[in-house]
Length: 623
Image (cartoon, rainbow, N blue to C red; front, side):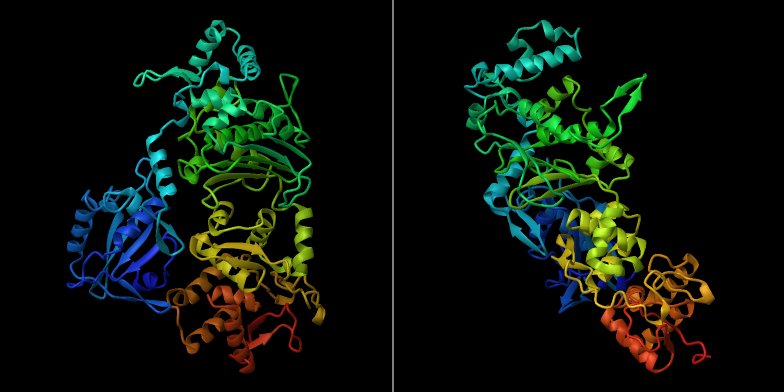
C-alpha cells in the first residue's frame, strides 16, 4: 500500500507495474492525458494500480509538474469515465481520487481498483476487440482477440457447467462410473429420496441432465458429461481436455515420474474416475499419525482432508476449454495442483474464505453430495489451517498468465526450521548463513524450498512491514545471496548457487563465525544483525536515518555523521550499515573506508580483511 505524506514520499516512487506518472498539462496545465484511458483499462483488467497526474519523469528521477485547478480535472475525469461512448464502465468512486497539494502545485492521485469478473473487460470506445488493454511491466498493451473473448465468456457465465449440450445423452455416459457414484451416494445418504429414482431422474436431480427452458433442448449438462462421460464424448466438446497425475521421485522440478495416470485410453477418462484413481495415490505414505475418535482409529486426518479439498478444488475450478491440462503432482516434499484458468475471486479473498465463485458449480455440488467436498468458500482456509497445524511452510496459491492462464496451489511438507534444509543451504552459502538475521534466513530458506519468491509471497509469510521486506531483499541481492530477475510486481528472486564463500571460515583474531555478526556482551563488545538490534536502539537509529529515507541524493557531509552516530551503539558490518542507511554495500564501504582513514571508526580486525569485519565508533578519536 502506498503512503504519501510529503513531496519526498511522492518523488521517491518509481514507475512500475502498478504505478504510472503523467504530466497531464495540456494547454491549461490541467487536462486528462490522451493515453489515460488506456492505462485505466489496463490496470482495471489486471491488478489495479495508481496513476499520478501532474508528475513527470526526468531521466531516472521524477519532478513535480503540477496541475492547475484540480477540481476541474476531477470533473473531466468523471465526465469521461461515465461517457459510454468513450469507456465501457466506470469503476471509480470519489474515494478513489485524492488531490495532493505541494508547493502551491496540485497532483491528482487516481487509485484504480481491480475490476470484477462481471465488469471485465474494461475497454476504450465501443468495441472490446479493439479497445481492451492489459498491464504488463510498466506498459499498457492491447489485448489479443483470444484474451478478450475469455474475458467476455467469464463475464457472462456464472455457472459454466450448467449448459445443456445439444446431441449428448446417456449413450455418452460411462455407466460403470455413474453406478459407482450412485452406490457411494446411497452409502453416504441411505434414506435419501434420490435413491429410489431411475437413472435419468437421479442425473437430473444432481444437475447432470436437464432441459433448457428457453431453447427446449434436453440432454446432458457439461457437468454430467465431465463427471461421468466417455473420453471421446468429452473431447468432442472440449478438444483440449486433459487430466494428468504424476508421482515424481525427487524433491526438485523435473519431468521424470515413477507413477502416472493420464488419458491413455485404458479407463473412462472422466473426472469422477480420475479422482477415484488418484486420491489413494495422493494419500499413500503420508507421514501423519492417525488420531483416535471414540476409541476408534481415524485415518482421515486434517492433512488427508486438505489434500482431498485441494484436489477437488482443482477439478471444479478448471476451465476445460483452455489449452492446458489439469496437473496433479506428488513429490516427497510437496503436493502440486494446477488447473487451467485464472481464479474468479482475488487470491487473498479465497484464502480468507467465506466467498466463492466456482466456475463449475454443479461439479462442486456433485462432490459435496457424496461427502467429498466442503461447503463453498471454506476449502482454501481449511487447507491453510491444516498445513499450519503441522508447522509446515505456508501453502502457496498463485496465478500465471503465460503460456496459458492457470491457477496453482503448492503444499510443501517442509518447515522453515527443518535441519536438513538448513544443512543443504549451508553447503551452498557456507558459514555466512549463520551470521544472517532470522528474517534474512527465513527468506533464503523459503527461496530454496520454493525455488523462487517475490515480495507478495514473503509478505504472506513474514510478520514484517512491506518496506522492511523490500530492504532485506535489496540487501540480499546486493550481497549476491539472491539473484534478482524482472521489474516491479513481476520481480522474482532465486538463490545464488554460485556465491563465492572464499574466506568465509576465516577466524583471524580468534573470533569465529558463531560470534561475529551476533549480539555479544562479552567484554562489552556488541555485534548486531539487522533484526537483532534492541528496539530502543533501533528506534534511535530510525530517527538518525530518517532523512536518508526521504532523499535519494544526500551529500557525504550529511551521511558520515549519521554512520558515526549509528556506530556508537556497537560493531556493525558494512552489510548491516548499508541496510540501515539505505545505500548499496559498495557505496557504504566507501564511506566506511574514509572514516577509518580519518580514525573516526575502528575495525574489529585492525590488520585483517576478514569477511566478518565490523566497525564501531572510535570513542578516543571522537572525544
